[in-house]
Image (cartoon, rainbow, N blue to C red; front, top):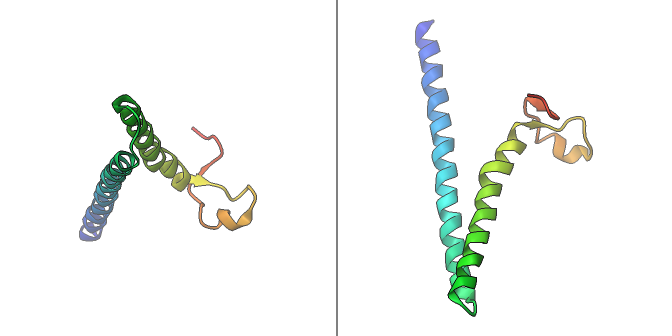
Length: 97
């Protein structure tokens, strides 16, 4: 019985760490792609280019780490359209603590 428990703990930690590393890897890829695309587009001044890079990286990383984690844990079964609710059915309804 204990071996099943410890096996489940190891698998849960492995999955948790894998997801963390996956989010970090996606964030690094997003950051590098946004920087390369912004420098490819080119701005008139260096400060405009740096501002564009900063804004693009902020929005991409904010969406990837903040909004997606919130959506994964949300339970939208009470809301319309029902097309999205069958995929987003986490454990937290609306605004629970």
